[in-house]
Image 1 (tube, rainbow, N blue to C red):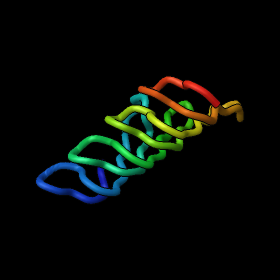
Image 2 (tube, one colour):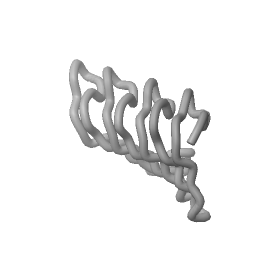
Image 3 (cartoon, helix red, strand yellow):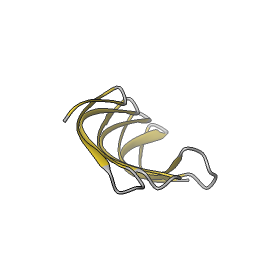
Image 4 (cartoon, rainbow, N blue to C red):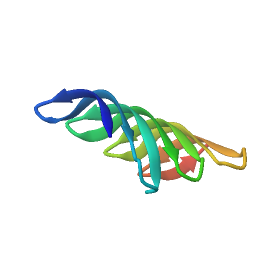
Length: 86
């Protein structure tokens, strides 16, 4: 379920996406560009992990923090969903 801004029939602008079924992502709150998650975002996963940072083409790119459900976290720079450096 999506609640947010639309443009030309696709998600575009700020919005929230909720997954009612247990896929990997529980919900997404952030910026969309032409139907693709890109920009400042927060992603919550069904295992209670969370990512807060910048996305580009649905992947973590730039500064961000990945919070694990065991209260540990990775803070730093990300490239294509991979942690590069603190």
